[in-house]
Amino acid sequence: MRQRQEGGSGRPKALITGTPGVGKTTQCRKLAAYLGVKCVTAGEALRGTPFVRYIPELDTYEIVDMEKAKEVVHLAVGTGDVVDTHIIELSPDPDVVVVLRKAPDVLYKELKDRKWPTKKILDNVWAEILDIVYVEASSRWPWAVQIDVTHRTPDETFEIIRRCVAEAKCVGDEVDWLDYAERSGFLSFIERLSRLGGFSSQPSSLS
Image (cartoon, rainbow, N blue to C red):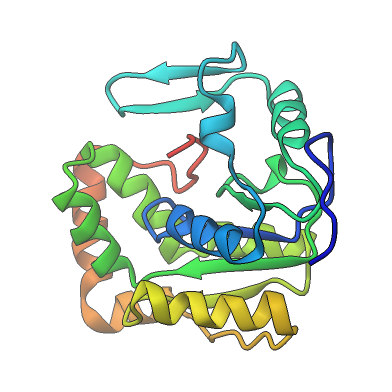
C-alpha cells in the first residue's frame, strides 16, 4: 500500500458521487476501510463552518461560499483518500470517479420512507432522472464510471467499485432514467407531484 499524505490538498484515490440517497457514504466508508485511508465526506467537513447555512424547512445545508467551501474540503483530503460528495465542484481531481445511480421511482420511495421534506425529495429525484450529477462528473472527468445500484446489494456494489479502484477493471452501466421513467409511468406521476410543490432539478444542498 502506498504511503499517504495526511491532509493538505492531496490527490484522492477515488470520488464516490451521485444523487443524495443512492448510497455514496456507505461505499466511501467501505472503500476507505479496504484501502486503509480516510473517507472524506464533504458535508461533514463543511458543517459548522461559515461557508454553509442550514435550511430548516428542507432539513439540509446550502453552500454560501463555494470557493471557501472548496478550500475546506481540499484541505481535508489526503493523498489516496476517498471523497464522498454529490457537489462535483467541491472535489479535488481523483484517480477514479464512480457515479452511483438508482432508479428514480425506487429513490423516491426510499427518500419518502426516510421522511425527507417533499421538495427535497422532488429536487433529488428530478436530478437523478435528468442525470445531473453524472453529466457534471463526466464533463469534468470523461473517464467517470456509473454504476446502477438499484438491484444490487451494498456488498455487490462495493465489489464492482473495488475492482475498478484496486484492479483498474472498471465496468460501468448504461443508464437512461428519463426513458425508464416515461415507460414505467413514473414520469407522469412525478410531473404531477412537482406541479404542486415545485422543484429545482439541482441538488445544490449538502444532503
